[in-house]
Image (spheres, rainbow, N blue to C red):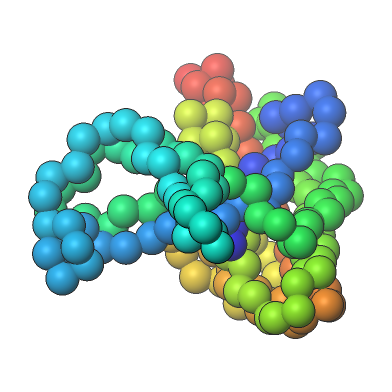
Length: 178
């Protein structure tokens, strides 16, 4: 299960864009995993075994992937898992550089009868913003593709919260000062 939440929400969007929990697949493209062939860019359909027949579960997009690469894509919204996002703007230094600071909170709710692990990954528009600095995170993060990643275990029928502060500055402002 995964949530990809864009950093700097207030600066990038005029309204609260949704960042739902999705379900996906991940495996290494090797013979031992049942593949081991180069994979072309395209749509991938996922089916689940039902009582009488296979049932379409969703579809996702993959890019060209060589043998040995990690294959990863989301194919549907997760059932019985939701996430609520909230943000609070924080004060920033007033100067010619556009800076943004926010306190972000994710409240993950699990309505399943089993505990689940949810990956929460923060994304940033690299063309527009410098590498974000994370402070005061309520849980430890790792890095994935250059962005912070938290793996949160949400108990059966329960909830878990993740909060952190993020600060960054505009790369466009730096260009305009040259």
